Image (cartoon, rainbow, N blue to C red; front, side, top):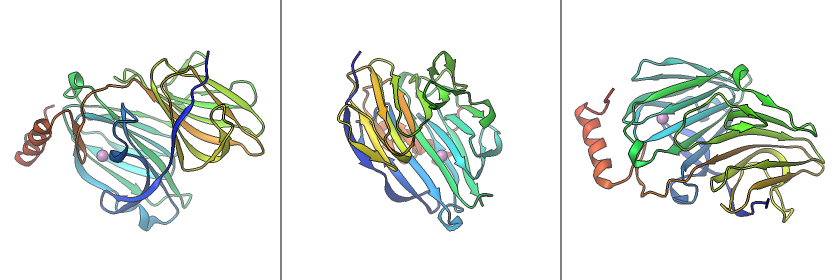
Length: 283
Ligand code: CO
């Protein structure tokens, strides 16, 4: 068994998306293809409703899966498949856009005064880009929590930890998505699936994530090298909370146009033509 080393560290960067939502982008188009099979991670974190109420009105997606994990606040959503509802603190929605979906995601004023959530984009391989769209929603209460020794807590959204499987299943890139809290003065090791791309995004506190012992803080994204089996997390005076994600790399060409991600320019052009003609939705 060997430890994975950190390949690079980045800080999330303020940007504006949707109809004027102020958010922080941990990684995205500029980092292609280093996080393959992941395309993007956005961090929505604000106590000013003016930063988020404009939301993400009706827009299409094709060729990807989007995963939204909400820590605080309320987001209303609706889509072309007829799904409609509200996600709240701790809830997860996992949307397979596949051949095409049109949806909207509209944050409401948060009851706590703060809206905090994440959206991950996971790519689909060429052979699965045009699969039927699918929507999975998991309530906070249905996300299992594993408690390894040392007072560590692991919320298992996707993947398996200590024999406990997360509720999000049958995803093409075989992802793990974990929300982990490690108390102060504690060491925690996690075995990663071999060869998978893995990264962590720090939500609060401080910890080291490899043998160098260097400490990292919130809003830092760490991409691990593919070689190695385990990640080692070590805290000192403070606890740390972070999201850990891993997935099977695709190694395919990426043609990315806004909310649509295909393998070639022709496929992108076709998608936008179909959207313009009203033939975008296949099922
Ligand atoms: Co969207």
